[in-house]
Image (cartoon, helix red, strand yellow):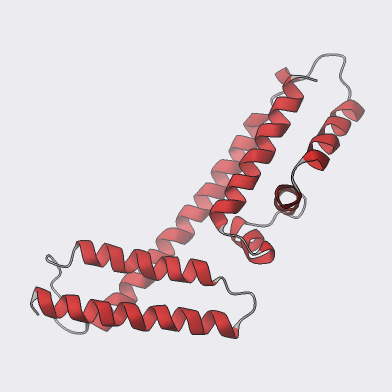
Length: 169
C-alpha cells in the first residue's frame, strides 16, 4: 500500500471510530465521551506521524483498531501511575515538620476542615470524592462531568491550600 492509500484509509478509519465512540457514549450515561474522542485522536495522530513509514499489508481498519487498543492501554497505565504518584505526593505533602509541637489532633482536624470548607465548591467536591471515597480521577471525572485533567487541577489546588494552611498554623 502506498502512502496516499494509507492516508485515505487512515482518515476513513478515524471517522469510523470517532463516530463509534460518539454512539457508544450516547447509549451509556456513565461513559466518558471526551476520553474516547481523545483516545481516537491520539491514535490518528500517532499513525499520521508515522504514515510514511507504515507498512500495512492487510487492513488499515484492523491496524487502526489495534493501534487504538494499544493507545487505550497506554493511557490506562499512565492514569494508574499518575494516581500512585499523587498518593505518594500526598503522603509527602503534609510532613509532621509543618506542625508545631503544641498542635494536637483536634487543631489539625480544624485546620483540615476549615481549608476544605473554604475550597471552591467543585474543587471541594472533587477533593472529597478523591480522599474520602477513594475514587480514581476517571471515576470522579465521570461523576462530576469534567475532564480528568480538571480533576487533577482541582486536587492539586486543594493540596496546595492544605499545605499552605498547615505551614502557617
